[in-house]
Length: 469
Image (cartoon, rainbow, N blue to C red; front, side, top):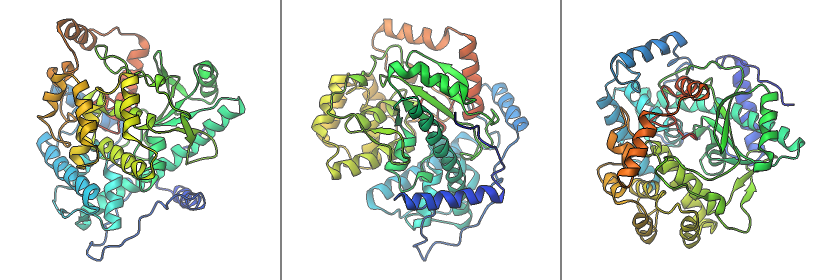
């Protein structure tokens, strides 16, 4: 069985040696190094920050939870930062990302002195490490102070992704020894296949897909490996990594020491709302659904068009899953695979219709194209919009790529936007306000609070990824 991890402080020399070994391993495996080249002569020298700069204690986290509850806004854990400051910073950073995607370089110089709000905005948008990389490449210009903040985001995620990759490989090896094949999904695939470096794509989960007949054996292996089950549904089970604290180690960046889960799926079908028809992705028809996972000797990855369908459905619904990171991710996937010929839009539309997902993916397609214009063909946007409820289409027009993800609270209108007819509205209200509570639901609720600061899988935090993340 795979060994339990040895938890050590990220500030030790041992961790930095691990990082160096990871960089050499990436080079030897054909991946890019985790340190971007400094190509811009105009960029000020980066102000190096200690890895512990934005750390918080478990006691401080719990104090903030209590404060947020007392204010009637349990999602907002930053008493010294207004939501307006965060919103302004998100608008700027999202415009920067759009310019880099469209023109390969941004003309916006990040020299705002509100570095804490910038860090929070990047954290909740999921793009702090990527901004650090782009600054290092000279694609984005920033003051030394802000460059130092995003360099810190990058260094933390570099350590985190190396650890998660190592653990994913151990799990995949354990599965393989029992004859269980697994497909790596979402961020743990796209970080290695589409982003400029794995360290630039934060992830809160290792998402693995196994056959329905292998699910029980795979769950047993994770239990034997010391993982703690935190959630179970009819399509997936979540397992918390052993050896970590439940509370987040920072509320201003994705911390190397933050807890993560293995989310074990035995179906790709996805129904995020009780009033939304499930996206039947298991019905997608293609000659070969899987390719090799690029980050290790074991494991598979989804092929197109199933890959984009899967990413887009999880980004689109619920709408507060649609972070700037998700839009950037989709743009990177689309542009690379259209050029290579792996993604054919006719096949995408055909299989989306087959799976009943063409309307569900519209929000992700719509905002990806707004962030990076001309990424999605006009006819694809039109047929997807036609398949999406009118209430959803009208709602999206009121927002931008920076604001579609709620940063304060989710409105009743947003909760009901996918619901068509009074019967569906009543079902959704019943689901949201009078859920069936079990001990497993309670544990899952508080576990995710600790990891993502009050349920960020489904609100505006980390990449969120959804019960991804």
